[in-house]
Image 1 (tube, rainbow, N blue to C red):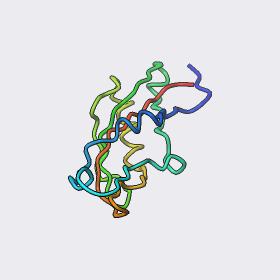
Image 2 (image 1 turned 90 degrees about the vertical axis):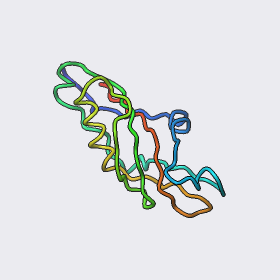
Image 3 (image 1 turned 60 degrees about the horizontal axis):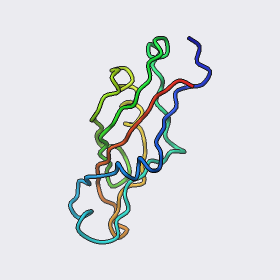
Length: 124
């Protein structure tokens, strides 16, 4: 199998708006003007498509639970729902661990938070 382009990451604006939830700090839900975390897509690298997945034609969407600190760095990331292929899940985990985010904030004060983020790897 020949792949002309690397893997793509598909995160629609509608999906990301729907899936951002459960902030770590209860203050995000209880007071002030809330800004939810957003990935800095122009700075974040897409997952590296695993060679075995390319050879076998595997694609998939993995749902990650991402804990973001007050500086926008990823503190922890876990698989919430697998793509069905361990190597695809691991590629997504490895990439997102290095991502940077605009942190959540309440009244302009950064807050730690948690989001659920879908990452889709597919061959193009």
